[in-house]
Image 1 (cartoon, rainbow, N blue to C red):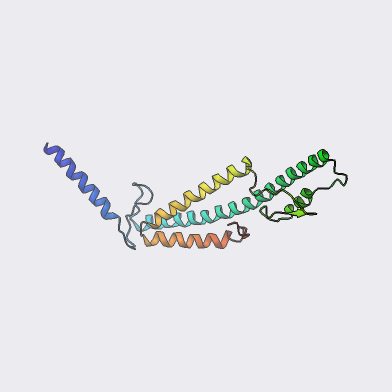
Image 2 (image 1 turned 60 degrees about the vertical axis):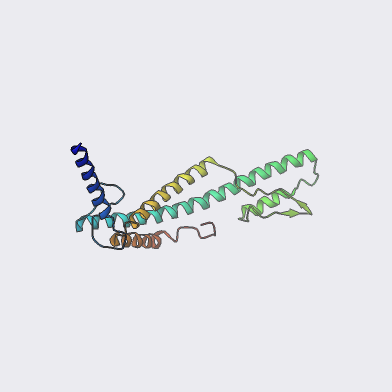
Length: 197
């Protein structure tokens, strides 16, 4: 019985010391847990190494944002082209079915305008006839699955950076902020600034 009591006391002491290490205000002392219980850099060298690692992680987050933006622009253009081809095929079938002697319909004109970069959301009309314009790009597995994977990876890194900042360790915060700034300097111009991001 006394053995059980002794075990409880040691467990409480360990828990108290673990909570004492988590300082809820801005500080520079080492010993904060970084992601895992085994990672608690306390020496100046370990603290510097962890800060450099967070700096690189922040740069990687900005790189992934640029990659996502570039791919997203490429995928959007391909989706427009696929939608245009589908609309063109539908228009040709409609012309053959209705026997339009002019051989022209409103959809190809609209498709040409869409392929030049017009919004998919804007309704188009020609000669008083309203044509169907797709509002949502089609689901394309080769586009949307990589998009989801890239987004998930970027969010993982973002949450890791957030957890590091939540330690209130000043060196970690400086490493993250400087890394995000450096990453934006290096890769920010690559990210398309077309209102989609």
